[in-house]
Each structure stands twice: as structure tokens, then as C-alpha cells.
Image (cartoon, rainbow, N blue to C red; front, side):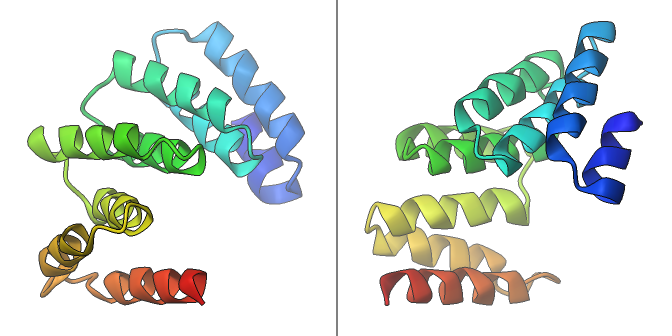
Length: 146
């Protein structure tokens, strides 16, 4: 894929976006197109566009965990914490749970000052193979708080 070349090989995200937008126009029923486009928009700080593109990916294929996590991340960047929480909880309810989803829920709890929510996510991560990621969540929260 052309977008992948620009994103990974050259780092030209503007060209990657152009290539991915062309892909979406050519294959409008393919969820990866808008999903990958949403990821590129987030990487370039275009979070409103990321939300729109990722919502389109979820409309096409609501059974892909990564799109829920990416949408949650873009919503958090826009300070739309209630929406981010709803999106992530919807993924959990649909049995599309993942460490990335829980990371978003941890971030929402952090920004909302919800100590119980923070602990719920740490408890969920306890004993899982990628439990180490929860340590990173805590370090990020601590560094943000000073």
C-alpha cells in the first residue's frame, strides 16, 4: 500500500494521508481504509477528522477492537471523556476488550479524577501477559501530575 510506504519508509504523513484518502474513495466498503486514515489523522493532530474516519470504519465493521481503541484515543485528545468512556465500554460489552481499550479507560478515569476507575483498570490488568503496560499507565499519570 502506498500510504504505508509514506508512513513507514519516508515518514511523509501528508502524502500517506493523501494516498489513504484515495484508497477510501476507491474502496468505500472496506473498513481498513477509514480506520487507517483515522490513525493517520490522529498522528497529525487532526482529531476531529480522526473521529469521523474511525466512526466510519466502525460503521463498516463494528467487530474490530483496534478501531474502538483508536476512536477512544482521538476522543480523549479532544477532551471528550464521556464519549471515549462510552466507546470503550461498548467494546468491552461486545467482547472486544483489549489492553488498549483498558488503557483508554484508565486515561478517562485519570482525567476525571476517578480513583475507583483507575483501580478497576489496574485490577483488570493484574496477572495478564502484558500487565507491564499498566505500570506505564501509572508512570504516565504520575509524570502528568508532576
